[in-house]
Image 1 (tube, rainbow, N blue to C red):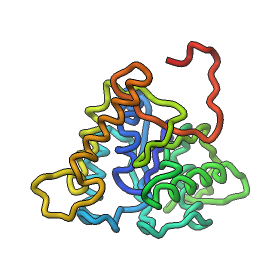
Image 2: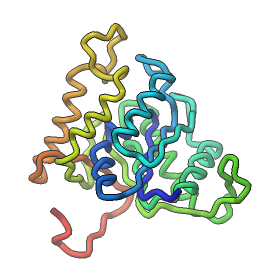
Image 3: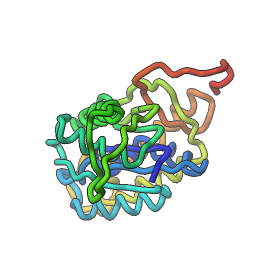
Image 4: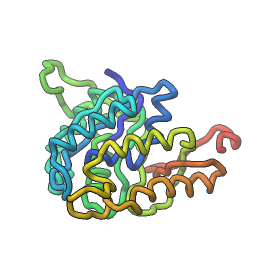
Length: 240
């Protein structure tokens, strides 16, 4: 299956938090979008990997994803080496996305920057003819494939975006997908330990950050991304 956009996250819920509204908007425009979770988030303070699996499936249904898989890398301990790069390359070649979205280039959680660099490197390597890969259960060698664009969503840190996407009509869908991860976020009745993302302030911040980015471009809500190379436009009025 070819996808238009493939979104990578180091943990289940990364993609929804960083780009959930953009994902929903692109799907509404007829694009086929998938998410690849690198780990099951098994080191998370709250919940269990099995519960996170269930929550990720619920979020996928809310967003209307065409595919969602988990590579089951070691949470907290995966590295950007040949073994992990090859597994990411296999996924890229399987889904052949034109656009890849991935973790923030710099962030509080060490897995975010690691995942960002791992996916970025794999996107380049995936286009090289002399790297041989096969998808699990498939006897045929995969063809090389390099995404046309790699963008990084913004997470905990307030990085300055290189561009922002108007998501005014999709912020509620984003919040619904985030709330599918009930074990991770604010619940006044939870007996689980508090974490940096379990407070009401954090959940509220997702919406007010999007509102502030929207304010800066004259819309209600927006999501920000950073790029690896210059963005080109054909005409000055391509920008809103």
